[in-house]
Length: 339
Image (tube, rainbow, N blue to C red):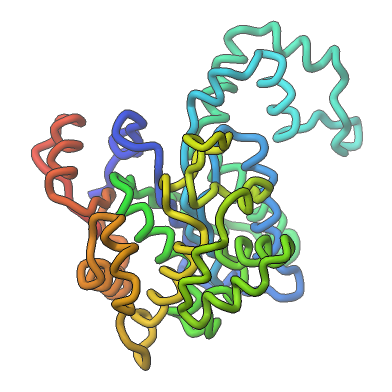
């Protein structure tokens, strides 16, 4: 039975969610190379991340579905002034002229909206809503694709799936799973060459910063890859892997003390578990798993299980205790664990 979104999205339990949306009838509607719909999604994600109080931690766009790892940041939305809420809304829905062409809003337009307290409250809530984020991602593409194909009807399945990520190990598992989708599907031989993924975006950012040697080291499983760390993620639009706020950093990341280099090593080695012709995660990563409070065997088993079963359920945790804690918080007897 479908679970109401309000019973899954509980920001007191977690702000992290894995969202999955499939094309109608699982048709390969995103595989259009002429109009490059996948690149459109890449660019749209960057636009929405800059408008919403929702941050993107990972993404992977396949031929008939897409995966997103999103973090809801309600405190960010609460700190916006009424004027900023109105400005952001006009970036999302710009005013239009008599010919229905978008125009730049005037200061009077912005001020008029900002003075409407009821409207501001509603807009502020929507700008921190997973449902509105997904709506603003998918609706424009659906209309554009129907126009390109000269047809009518739905493009995506009506309801997207959202999975609450309840702890750090589960969070990194989902991030790696999303980044490895093209490798698992045989679309790309290596994680960093996977098109339309967050890992390719991160690696290209590292290369642009002049850290190509470290990226090459990752492919060889070298510990030198861990050196890709301090400050390198500051200007990347994706959520940083390493949370450096205790060291003066301004952006919230995945985990304190867990570097981008370590994550790239982890994903590269994990790719061996999603290819039939490769071995399991290397034992050289044991120190990383110790830091995560996990083990190579436990990590490998969970990745393989997700590959075989998919994401059946609405919650993901690495321990039964965490599931019980959240179940008690939301007033349920139990939660079915995806992993």
